[in-house]
Length: 248
Image 1 (cartoon, rainbow, N blue to C red):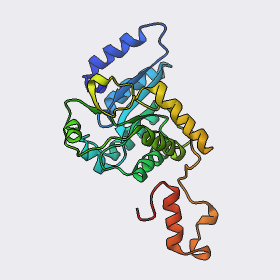
Image 2 (cartoon, rainbow, N blue to C red; image 1 turned 60 degrees about the vertical axis):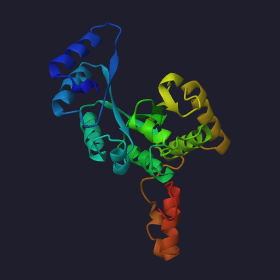
Image 3 (cartoon, rainbow, N blue to C red; image 1 turned 90 degrees about the horizontal axis):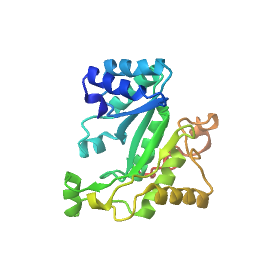
Image 4 (cartoon, helix red, strand yellow; image 1 turned 135 degrees about the vertical axis):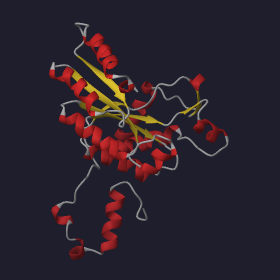
């Protein structure tokens, strides 16, 4: 977490970066709960000096029960605050999102896409959950308590996610390069040059694209369901459109 350093240390590091005459900008990776105003004000100085500045936030999901399960030690509120404060200072925001987190349903993954869109986050990097050796998740995996996504399942869910994501969100990455020697799972190759074309092919097969199912508000003709159809039927249809099941 780059912003964990004291302010003088962070300033020294950033000055070294922009000291290279070929540098036109930089990206600073951190957690949503590690961006106090003092750090943001410091980073904003470089934006005021016309550098292209991105803040990468490791959010993974917007759901508190999942964040608690994976011991992130922060919630959605920190992401909302960090995004707001970054945009206030003209800093671009990228969010890391992971599909296949423990106990998270497909509907909840699609809700993450909708919240990311509602916050007007500038870009995302989408990853499958990788079971790294020596972690608590590795212990759960070896005991049969966690099942990672298969290749086809990840490709399908990624395509679903993109359909529910605003078309204005830039996609910087769709998978994670990870050496086989440091992971237990998934068994399939997560390298981007394999996964990204497969997701593109799935969208082509469906005849869809990013944002096709993105929706944050009802249309005018949807505001009076009692006049046209049964209320429960209406809300079942709405939940289905948002990626959940009628019983969610």
